[in-house]
Image (tube, rainbow, N blue to C red; front, side, top):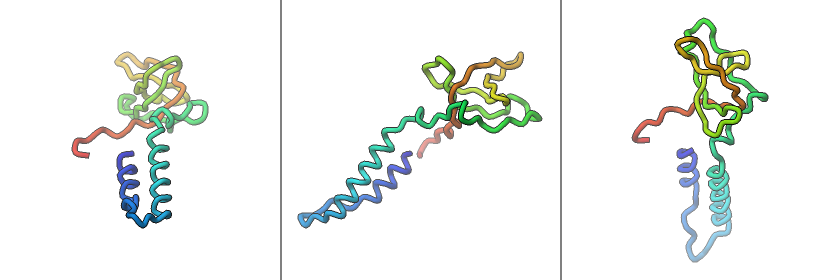
Length: 118
């Protein structure tokens, strides 16, 4: 999102002079509205309800500990957590003794790891 906002900032026209150009003002007003709209979204708005779509089925030939984790909302939960999609609509955490199952209602891919200097 930072990159997108920086790009919008570069698209802005220079501040109008005393000979104000209505086109430039309208352009900058439109960019400001787009910035406000983008900033109004939270990551929770990007969650995918499990009754709408599920992630790809995991490769059952792989070690379950290597399966992808997703940011999820558990039914009745108040915070986001990460769980593994186990396939066939099942979600859980991979434990030493097997799986711990949870009723997930929404999910999204995990964000990339933060890297310093970005």
